[in-house]
Amino acid sequence: MSTPETARSETVAGRPALPDESAGTRAWSTVRVVAAREIAVKLRDKAFLWTTAFMLLLVTAATVLPVLLSQRVPDLRVAVQGEAAVEVVGLAAELGAQAQDEPAVTSPLELLSIGGLPRADISWVTVDPGVDVQRLLHDEDVVAALLGDEPDGLRLVGLRDVPTELETLVTAAAGELQVAQAAHDGGLSPEQVTAITQPTPPQVELLEPRDEGTMPPELLALLFAFLFYLSVLTFGTSIAQSVVEEKQSRVVELLVAAVPVRWLLTGKVLGNTIMATAQVGVIVGAGLLGAVVAGQGSLVTQLVGSAGWFVLFFLLGFVMLSCLWAVGGSLASRVEELSSTTALMQILVIVPFFAAVLPIDEGTRTLLSYVPFTAPLLMPARIVLGTAEAWEPAVAAVAVLLTSAVFVWLGARLYAGSVLHTSGRLKAAQAWRGTD
Image: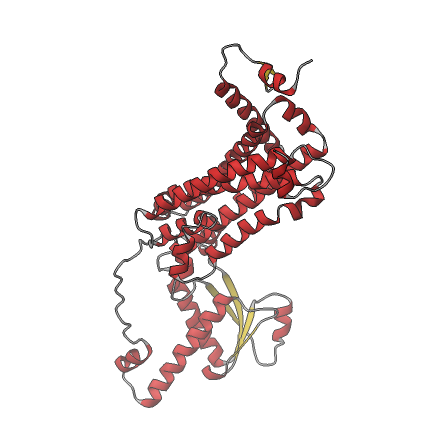
């Protein structure tokens, strides 16, 4: 009669072990099979596929849609009533046409910072006094109505709202006419009017200018933090659910009888690490592709240059925490108990995320960038912001690596002591004693 130890020596993931096969080769073969199983399960998970597709759609839309929308010139038809209203809407139409002759916005970043007047094609229909303007608005013959006989007494009437482009252009035109009238009444020359209405702005000088078209460092740091938070929380929860489902179905008893527990844990962590890295890579790749489509070569260079340290800290931080997520699953006997057994892991993910996105003083940020739990988020952020010395990321990476090694060992011991316990929820101390 063979024992589990004998079974382990005779088989490797369900196949006979070769006589000259070393222990290292058997371990890697088993880990690879377990990892492949985790990957296959994840690829069939509809929630994972839909989440990835949604993130891809969101990143692509955030990159491309603002550029496409910025190229659209709205066609606005206005009802005007009154001498001043006719004059103002005519000047507003000229201003909207002049704005179209200026260079078009080529990226969402330029769209956020662009100044000047909006582009628009404005046409109008003059209505006589007494005509029911509200009827025109209800029939949607016009988008708005401009009423008034004096430039300083105009009313811009809309049904539910007034297009922002129209409101801006009409406001600018009315202001320009009022200034011209005031200058005429005061006997000011055109040069004096220009000096009053268009004063010379101060000259802006940047000591360390940022390349045009690049993303603000703060936004890039926030993007990295969000990707790490989302991936670790999503895949960590998936690892914990996988472990507890195997316990409920008693599949884990067959697995542990065939392979050592540490090999099983390593395969789970490896498979989910590969999938998490692949998902982040696909999402970042979609963003880079969108930046290329939007003509943002500088942004692509910036992202590629900042991604190296992010990927390294992402891998170290993910491995460090994923073992604890597996322990959280092994401590539970039912899926309903995961909220309590994984509470610590959720805190270790959420707290660093808020530490990375909330404004904190530079001294505290520097200190937290060396703490293993917060370093995977804060050190890449400091690198992006340019506040980290060249040697600091290496020191922080070593600290996270050593902590990861400790957590892998700790997680393997707790996992081995709890994964076969199916009668109720365990505490970490009980799982630790279960291996003695």
